[in-house]
Amino acid sequence: DTEVTQTPKHLVMGMTNKKSLKCEQHMGHRAMYWYKQKAKKPPELMFVYSYEKLSINESVPSRFSPECPNSSLLNLHLHALQPEDSALYLCASALGGGEAFFGQGTRLTVV
Amino acid sequence: GIQVEQSPPDLILQEGANSTLRCNFSDSVNNLQWFHQNPWGQLINLFYIPSGTKQNGRLSATTVATERYSLLYISSSQTTDSGVYFCAVLAGGYQKVTFGTGTKLQVIP
Image (cartoon, rainbow over all chains, first blue to last red; front, side, top):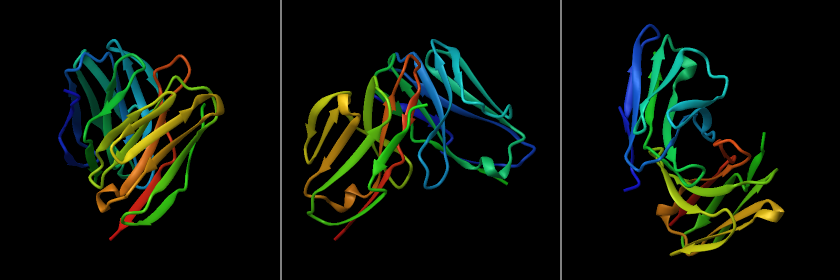
């Protein structure tokens, strides 16, 4: 099983809302990632968790708050987003520098 | 950080034609992957290929790590091959996967 599951698939939120994106994998991978992808651009790294600890934060604004409650789950908490934050948010996992597997993404629209 | 450039940026093929996509990277890498992104945004794993050559059906890939490039070959293209192809590399001591600029492929009947 090489599945990474993301929920929800689509999300529309207002600029004053608080919402969360969820990501789950059961492959025993200890590295988990959040990426942001704008239209016609490659995915850009936001955060990396290694063994449930935040190891990379690519200078992401504090309105995005990641959380890794256990080795299978990764959340991205959203608060006070801007319309320019509308994008496809992708979660991935990998086994210590090996092959990475991606979820199907959450398409976020901020209104 | 490492730079990853792909060429060509856009490619239109007649169904049945062959093509070669290229990925150049600016520094040594620990691993390299090729993905196909479908119109719904899903990134589908094609190859995990830090070095050498692999084949899977009509697709094959070659990575020459010492010369810092990788090639993806698509033979007898089909309309379902349309989409964006990305290479992605892992470099350095960090678990940071960096994507290339992408090649948008359109296969027409």
